[in-house]
Image (cartoon, rainbow, N blue to C red):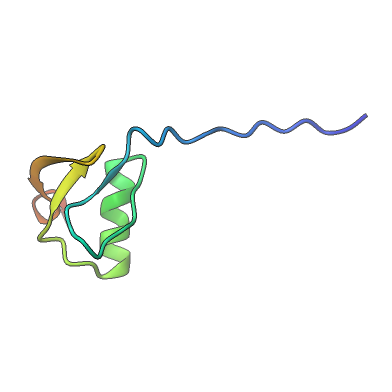
Length: 65
């Protein structure tokens, strides 16, 4: 009869972002965060956060060009 669709939900409890007041994006993987930083031109000299807690790592230290 009709089509059935499967919609996966993002677990909003496991999100990566930056410790920066004006960067409000968050991503389910570290790779997606780093790609957004590169593509958007965001300053990578900010600490990465995981679930809102600082990781001790700067994004710049994880970006390999």
